Image (cartoon, rainbow, N blue to C red; front, side, top):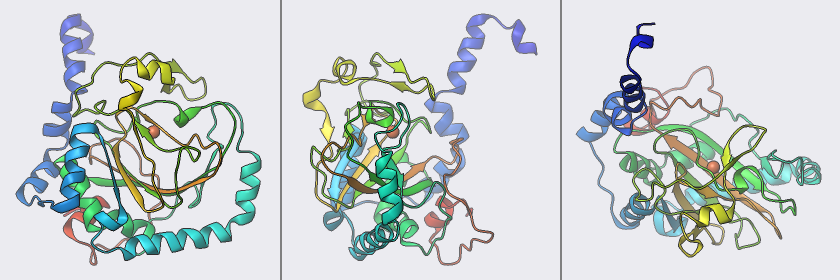
Length: 308
Ligand SMILES: [Fe+2]
């Protein structure tokens, strides 16, 4: 390899450029950026307020009532999750027995849709994510057309074990910007493991200092305790997603966050994720043999990787 003869400084500069947000946005994602720029969608009302908070803090909290022009999406989602909860009652009981679990394993979360749901654009789990308000917010936040990468419903069990895995502070690894949407389907107070965020620690934010951390031996992810996070962002600034069923949290999970440390009662939460098309992260759902773009908008078809 010719690169082995290059001076160290040049190699370092090449590495820095390769991993830079500039290259990510203007080279790796140039096509979705242009496609978005020629037809940007102006947000209004609550969606605009959510976008402003999200850009500034990396998190915004709203409700289905305030944000969605068609509230039936939320009602349909909640009804469907109640149906699945009933159907899986026995499996949930069994999983609850193992929830205290082994250190560094996420046994406190049960994926109601299984580990890899099959993508069906007619399914409310997919339609909810791709409805106008959510997809427009995702695209506006990235400033490009985004890809839909993940959806599931998490049933988080109340446990007494010490905080582990995503219950500790961490950054998600998938991309430079990551948009996750969390929809509470049960009331979430302090005892139900609210999602918690350190504002300003996302790429667009002002806080670039990293907290001290340790690595979990199981999957080598960096994790920080509350005291370590508090040295970078004081606890009084942490934003806690407390709210009744119907609360919707938008969060750039590249910024520091934690959640799901339920102590007194379970939490049921739908969540989905958008990344840039250049993200190397694999989709966490299976694709059916055929997927038709005919009933989708331009943005929805792109989000599902059908091209436009
Ligand atoms: Fe996370």
